Length: 271
Image 1 (cartoon, rainbow, N blue to C red):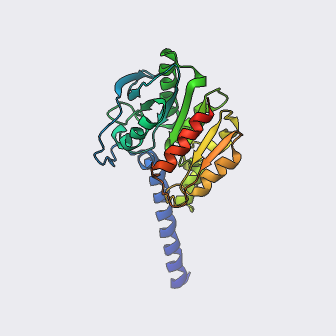
Image 2 (image 1 turned 90 degrees about the vertical axis):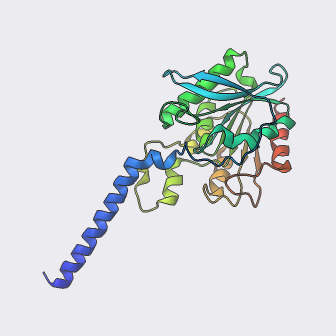
Image 3 (image 1 turned 45 degrees about the vertical axis):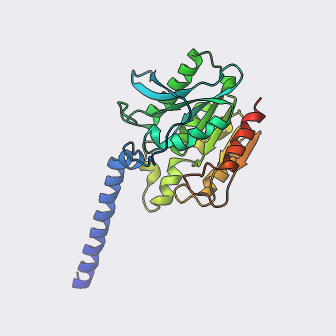
């Protein structure tokens, strides 16, 4: 074997070793890459809606923190708000403050491993958390027909899962992805993401099973979850369906008067 061929062989061997090392890192670190409970984007917003801090017990006996706001459970719908993959409940204060202008009750749930909750987040674990929140609302006498499932980013994957084949009042998806497989593949295109992923969140396969009215909101300038994913879910969704696709919004959508108007109009359409 010539020296040149040996050098080429060594070069490709090193490339393969690097590739395999990165692949192994992605596999063993994937949940640390996906879930960021300690990330803090809290900008100091003060709550201007009254909330009660409540505890929700999951089927695997975890105690979860949630914030509950009750305005009128007889005459108004109740939003179950399922947040994204990063930060605490405080990071959503700027959003839920806007609910004061809407005739709505809400329950804002913190996932296992988030906001001081015990446990480690996984796809199946977060499904259990969301179902426990639904059960908590039902024990308060709130029926499925009066519950709106609201998912934010990662939370859209959980919202789509639990909304399947149910008779909820409505579903709202903010900055949704089609599946974690497609989202991961867009960021790491040379790696076998489908084979590596433990938590797949395949909303694109489940959206057809959502029979409730649905509002999908996605900024066209989203640099984390490509806008075409939200548009694809909208195209796959059943009627009645509604959209809010602002041209210049990024992944963290701006809760401005246009967005609040779209949410409010959607909720009014459910009555």
